[in-house]
Image (cartoon, rainbow, N blue to C red; front, side, top):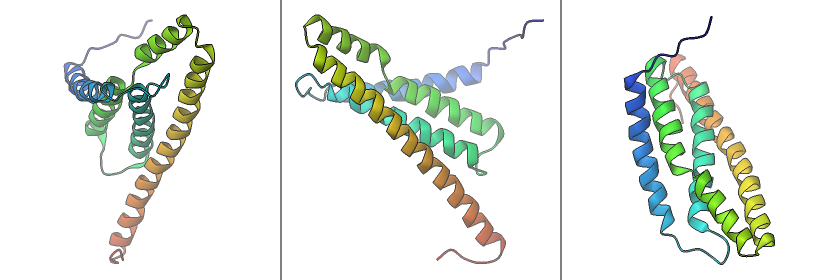
Amino acid sequence: MARQHIIRVDLICVVFLGGCIGTALRYACSVIPDCGAFHIGTFAANMAACFVYAALSAWLGGTRRIVGRAKEYVNRGCGMGMCGGLSTMSTLALEEFTMLHDGKAMDCAAYCCTTFIVGCLLAYVGAHVGLRFAGAEHNDGDRHAMGKEAD
């Protein structure tokens, strides 16, 4: 039997609101001037989204401060909505194809590789930052539970 999908209006609203914020941030990045063939605004938006989404996901996976439906709202609103609105595969693809069309294959390859490699590295660092924040929360909670104040 096929799994029935239930449309949750609350989640649609949370993703929509997060997407509005992410899209506004993306627009703000779009006014950053390019540096030759390197599209700084698109690159900055995509790299910020890689870092933030990875940090958020790792933190949400380890935090005890947000639970249940609130955790789902933060994940969907900030992650899927805001980071999804901030990042842009379509603009990246357009920029890549424009470079290829203009005969700038090496610039295209460099921009594509830089975006992919730096994005993966920032996601890795973001995940570690998120885990560190989640771990720090656990350590603070343990100190308070034992009656000791953090230094």
